Image 1: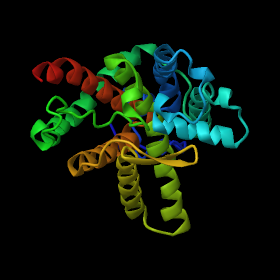
Image 2: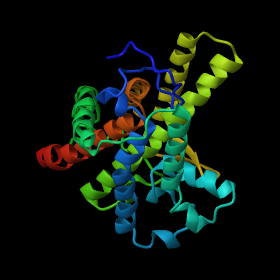
Image 3: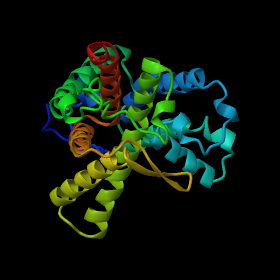
Image 4: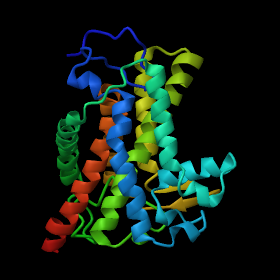
Length: 292
């Protein structure tokens, strides 16, 4: 499995190499992330427009319609000159362009086996299960007696300025979770960890191991913080009420996602995050809500 290094240099933030052209090697490539996540990107866009048919006529300054990390991408696009209407459409293309650039700079093969998508999905679901178990253990109803039905508390569904406006029930939670899986991993793993590694290792001269540990911890803490307090559209906002147990859970989840990102690449970690959110939404809707 791991042990043999590629002759080409990976530039996607992934720290582990696998036997050339093995399943683990193929599915770690940026081109696999691009092709595998296309359906998720499409479902998030279509789902958002279905939930909010007037979304294109809405002002950019309504982050409750989107995942916070998605709004950050919108803000960046607006800053560089995109119109507000275009910022509702362009973010998926930003993801695709970044993954194409990473594929080009990685020097890895472009060939994609569609048959690999089934085991990739199974892998993402299986890797999401430890988080479900951890969430059940750390977010019991007894910890938040005022919300007895929310055993999972939807811990990794990205909060918005007005969480209640996310969408109609389960479908809204699923769509939001898919968006969180893609755009939160883009911001907190692909962007932030790589930038922090450049800061600590290249600019400050720390050893690689120490730079990795510090970068992962900082990204995990900020990942957890942004579900409670965030800055979008030039304004500070507050998401979910702060609860220490939920905050610690999200921080631990951020570390877990960082490990998956380092070992398996962006496509798998985004898939794991999205499937965790989907499973949590279904459990909340059908299992824990029924017990209320």
